[in-house]
Length: 289
Image (cartoon, rainbow, N blue to C red; front, side, top):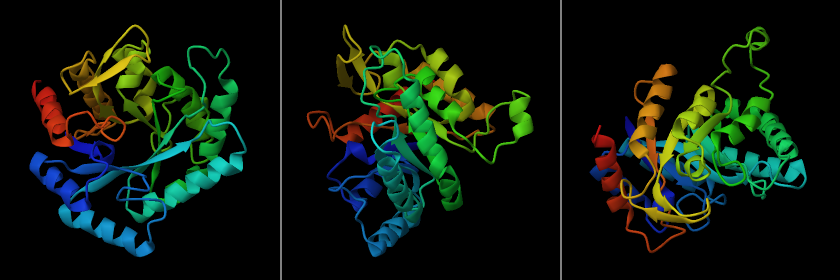
């Protein structure tokens, strides 16, 4: 497997510090968070983008994804969301990112909202509008299991509605597997789990569109929102089982060297241990098998 980590886990780190940790832990990829105070703000100049890309290439570190904060199901005009998608896509392309992460972001409680069809349709419509541009740029759109659509069953409703004009209509009519080169799904393993979706069920839903997993661990209390983050292996999330499922889904796609990414939420929870401790803990979990 190829290990990556999100810069969310080290919000104040410089490029050189991030690359130092990458070398130390054998990390081969980064999820670069779009952050005004981080290494890749949307306002980064063309020269700054070129310098960052070159530094990563020189270190042999790939940009697994640009972690944008675009919310594709957000209420409001399509044009606002599309502008955000295109602005982030350009940054992703300039950095040589393989993918660009987006959130559902409908702003509603998934357990209290009976009809999500309007949100699902809006998200799919907006992804469809920029899918061709993303392909031309060589960037894959990636929807994460998150917020209003935390389970595999939730995000797959959106992705299945995306109008992929490059799809083989005959294959679709024959009920063939979806084209995995379209919109992919990032399996943030915490969110389906805390909303009661078993790992096998999540995998069943996301498998045709699976991109890679984001690993984190936590204790879950009496409600899905009652979450206490823990170092990998110290919470209740069945990470080893999820890793096995991720390996199987990747193998089914012909990928024998899948990406595994650590999303350590140090930026939101500064009381957490530092990123190197979390990386070491995740490596122990993954080495156990």
